[in-house]
Image (tube, rainbow over all chains, first blue to last red; front, side, top):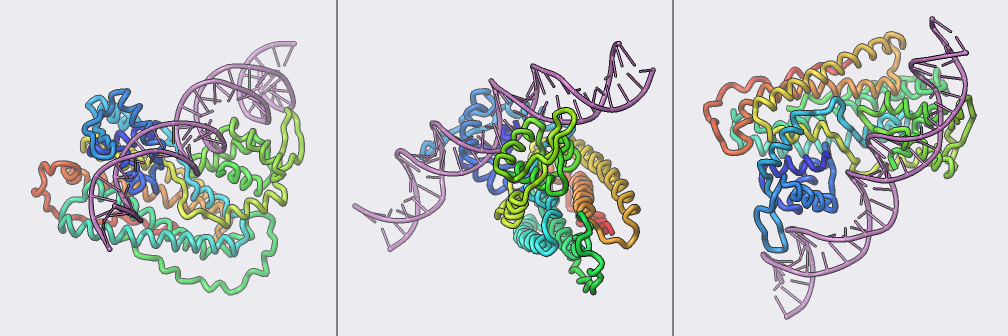
Length: 204
Length: 204
DNA sequence: GGCTCACACTTCGAAGTTGACATGTAGCGT
DNA sequence: ACGCTACATGTCAACTTCGAAGTGTGAGCC
């Protein structure tokens, strides 16, 4: 049912076509929350319309149909929002790989962690830039909008990834042997340069 | 394909039956990474065996079949681990709800955020306790195992949730008006307290 | 006028996931 | 000997998601 409410939620903000909604999924939800392709979006919109939770508000050029949420739809969305399940379904291939990192040799695990840190650092920087612009436009002293709050969540998430990946990377030599049978331990007392780990300052 | 590699990864650690693997999913992966029921596990194990990536290592009492990963399986798992996709598929109903928070009235959004902060704080405390025990057993000064690293990731994630939810909660009155039509803005030029929030010290 | 690109929607087979129903066994306490 | 619980696996229909192939249009550019 999540896809249904994701669409309803996006339409609660403003009317949009299936095409628009697919784009919004890509820009907004894909990375952190939910993924859906247009081949899923269009049929679901049809079903939502059949259930009177949305309606066609306008028709445009290329067969474009702009949908708007109905009162019934708002009610349904509200009910869903106010009744969260005890446990949420989570599916995260990235975290899954983290869990399985111990199946790799130390050097390979470290290499992967470097990649993770790098990739997330890049994302962090990009988002930071966008947020800075956003904040500048809003004017100093303005209260953060809901959008800004979600961005803040993203900022902190990326920062967490970067920090954690670097931390894990810098400790992995030791952890390597700890995983299973102590293979080549003991000889590993070599100098651990203990890279200061740029312990980046908290996001902003 | 993720389920397949999740199983392979768990089996890389130690041989297990379908029943064991289902339990492991519940204990280890369910909350953060991936969910699978036994009705998915058993058929997949059969397929993995057919592909020679695992094999039946032993048979026990109640028709129990203990599977072990083969060399071919290790190779395949390794290949998968070393070739991560550019973007990972993520599905998180909780975060989805965060994104849609702006569809609620301020008071309701705040109530929900309080629940979120509370729930995550509870999880944080539970995990902290378990980690403390774990660390005590390992002895002070010992290098963190891979398991410990994953726990650290969990710790930081929960802390992030708590911090963010509280921060958002404390700012939401302002944000309320920002969502759609600027209702009662402008009067809100108040001091913007520290942004970064409590920014807890990195665990250890 | 022709080119290209973004816009906009449709369809469908394959694969993955869920939830329920189904079946039976070993071990333990009383 | 009886009953309970955890162990252990199998199956299947309904539903969701994915990935690819397909159709056509409006707008801007040269």
